Length: 173
Image 1 (cartoon, rainbow, N blue to C red):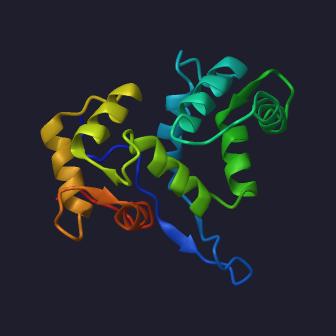
Image 2 (tube, rainbow, N blue to C red):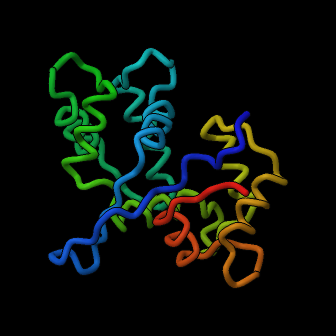
Image 3 (cartoon, rainbow, N blue to C red):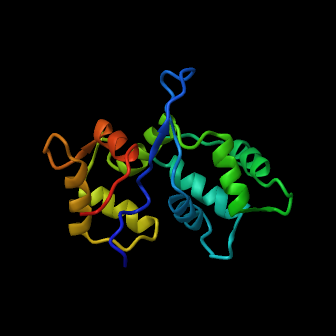
């Protein structure tokens, strides 16, 4: 396994003046490919509606409330060629139309990792979510990730630290 962090890091690109509380981030291509691959559970190079629904359900289990018709509409909008699947080009087009990942997406991701809902992410929670996503990760490597962004030294990642982590390019030392 390579010594890269799981697909949690994004590079801050721009903040538009018209979005005071909505900061846009544009993830790197290889990061988006990893996200696409997580959705594409059968590894056939395309995301089926079932795979998409499954991924949305997993992401909304962190406190969101995604309705079935919203998922269907989002899938249909992304499937621009109408073949019943979302290929990587379609996936990237949706990301570019939406301006990348916004602060609401980051907050939703935080909630998905904060399994006990206490407002902090522990190394154990990080490990559990990484395993649910199919990542091979040890508790010690999760502890290192937490230490890498734990600005206040409490051994946990709070929302501010998570936002900082998600909005900078992270490199493993």
